[in-house]
Length: 415
Ligand code: ADP
Image (cartoon, rainbow, N blue to C red; front, side, top):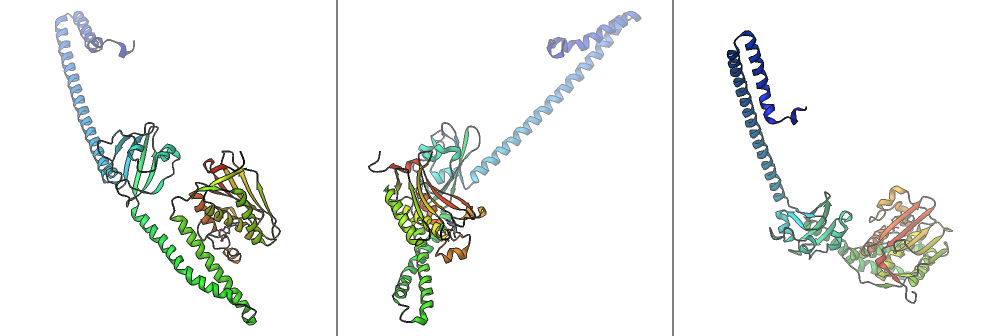
């Protein structure tokens, strides 16, 4: 029988009862049974007393250790609390399913206007109502960090929000004060916008006068005049592109309407043909039967940048194709395909940065400013769309503008 299943009394008394019985038997054999029993009893009592002493000492040691452990835990908890209190960022723990607030630090009161303890257990989205975050919270694990949002406490305070689902049932919302950073960013934006604006008038004057000069009047000046006209044209384009970018950057939303895509595509084709001057056949494929919803002006500027690139980076004789098609998710894709130089894969991730060029000389020679794809990216961002680039060196490139289903409208006159 295993020891554990024996009754407690048998476990306690068996070790003493057996030796006592043995002592009695031995005592009887030698003729002193009672003396032997008395001696053995004394020994048993002494043994039991020692056992008890051990037990008490052990229990005392355990109590001391548990007290020390508790003290260590309390110290650690206090340190964590002090850390959370000292954090300049607001930290909120929310339950994943109910989205109720489980805990928040003092910075959450300052930055988001939460009240302690009234807001414990309140629904997070509802409590932070002034922030446009309901659909963002719904995205959960997929939610991209939100940058530069006005604080519900003070609109001058700008916040960035980040959602971290850190366990099966808890979310962490981290909110950081980015006022200083946004101010610097605004200073930079304003500076570029102001410089471009200031340059625009003098450039227009210079460009205008240069255009008026006729090389035929001064044949020996003709090459210089042509170069000056070319360069002043380039500068004007650069200033226009910079102004377009700053205008797009300072917008959070655009005036939207149904964009008639049939006429958009024929305008783009005309522009491509004008730019190509017969060097490339331009095809248009439009089997989508839909229009887009957005800003006609900005979308035209984005698409025509792609068309201009296709013409400029495709040697004479190459093909250009504009295609509008539905995508599987019910959205639409406008793609510009060329059979031009193509782009090495290492350049693709950086292509939409301002002034990033694969070959600066090729870009300049063809009249590029290095800002075209940055403009495209911004315009698409304002339409919650994105740019996909597929390219192979020597084969050509496809630049696709991918729009979600919410941007698709059935074309007028069609079901
Ligand atoms: P740029 O004014 O220099 O054309 P963009 O921002 O429009 O500036 O494009 C950035 C760079 O991407 C270009 O300099 C070029 O190297 C590359 N690029 C853009 N479109 C194409 C294309 N269709 N084929 C090959 N390279 C391209």
